[in-house]
Length: 109
Image (cartoon, rainbow, N blue to C red; front, side, top):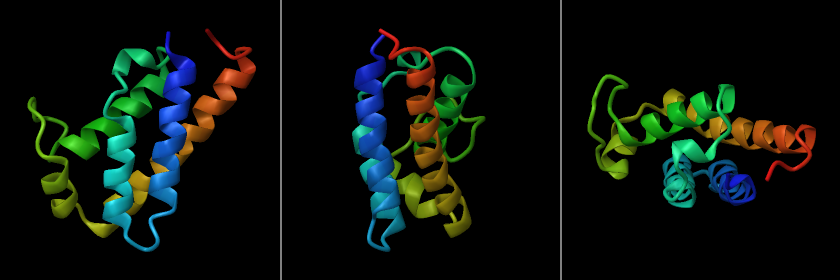
């Protein structure tokens, strides 16, 4: 598993989402850029993987039922402010949760 790699990318994404200088959509796009090389399988199975899948889907799909991905820019432009704020908070929260998991798991290989 690439947990240290994922943790680094997620930390970059959380920083982008949390420090967008008032430009929330720019911050979310920055989060996407940090995460675009992270695969679902890179996360430990269970709640962390489910949370990452939700974040990925909300960045790349207009609805969870859609099979294909859309342009992240188009998805962000169509997203309401409340949904964008929740998504940014979820990225930051997942970063914290993965960091706690790695500490509890002894740094996981």
